[in-house]
Amino acid sequence: MKFTIITVCLNSENTIKYTLNSILEQSHKDLEHIIIDGGSTDNTTHILKNYPFKNKKVILKKKAGIYESINIGIKKAKGDVIAILHSNDIFQSPETISNINNYFSKTNENILLTNIVFFKDDQFKQITRYYTAKNFQPWMLRFGLMPPHTGAFIKKKIYNENGLYDEKFKIAGDFDLFLRFFLIKKKKYKFINIT
Image (tube, rainbow, N blue to C red):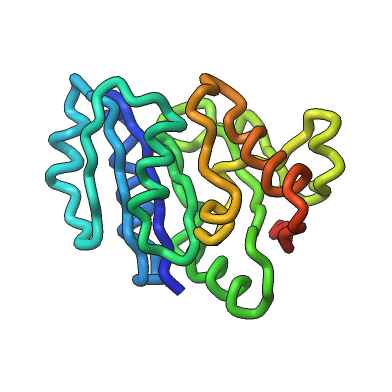
């Protein structure tokens, strides 16, 4: 199964190298990495230019908002599954995508929800928050509770059927997206929580 990883960045020279290394280290090799830069004025674009990942696309889109940038990546994605890994995010291990691929191979689910961890520093050493998807159920969205969207692995066909992020939102576009995926549309999508 092919995966598309989308990274949105802006002036991320202090963290993006960790994100890029996290992709390079993945044992699952059927990957493409789409990076959308919103007009960095620091060393970010130089780092991206020297990023040795073979299947990368770097798109420069000045003043693009976060949801517009993610949508650009989704539209260009050739992968069966799309994940978002921003420029201050990393995967837990080199086996992350391989493990997710195994889950998709064994099930009919369209969406896999995983946990994420927030760190205080740029070197990912001090944990400040653990955001779990473990007990998420779609009804929880009615109370404003949602799973972490950067921990979601979503088949591209789900975007094709439901639309992309609403670019009118400055924040909470991910909440709107999950509402459409889980509650508003008549079709109920299978999903699994991975903990």
